[in-house]
Image (cartoon, rainbow, N blue to C red; front, side, top):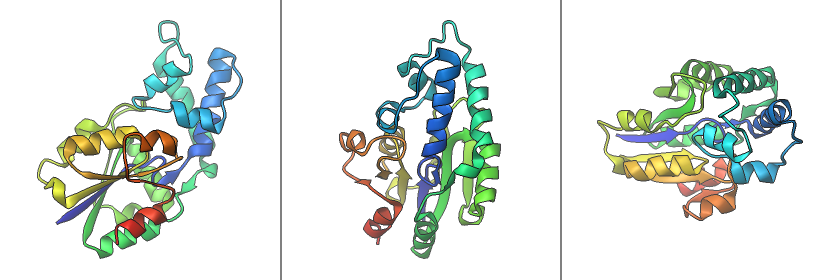
Length: 209
């Protein structure tokens, strides 16, 4: 049996513009700073998310990380009409299923919100497994991925994501990894660590034929 593991935000969900608005809202509210642009975001964004905030100047000796997470999610959800399914996603899902893959999502998003988003996007039926975290803090998802892989052969699996965190997990699991560039991290940044970086999900689909 073959398995395809997907990241969600930035891979299946095209939410870059919304995420940029959210971080700029937080920068203005907590640091009284002007907005960052697309390129700055792509070069700084990382996991765990708390490290991303620190890189942008958030000082958690004086700021409450939980408050910031709540504010981010509140702003993010207020803009939900602005995010959309990544172009080429459904075609890729159907292509993989036709090749005999079972599809899974493993995300750092809170699981109940993740499942709701999948339902709203009309894609839940493509996935045998949808797994997220227990809170809204944007933590690491390694443990989720390792638990999912316990009864699977890495040579039968592929991992599709958009960040170096996805590559790190795939490498630790011994899984082939395909990354979508300039989604939440810059393509040039990803290429420093991974040869399989693509401009679109359609390109990934083509290389998996």
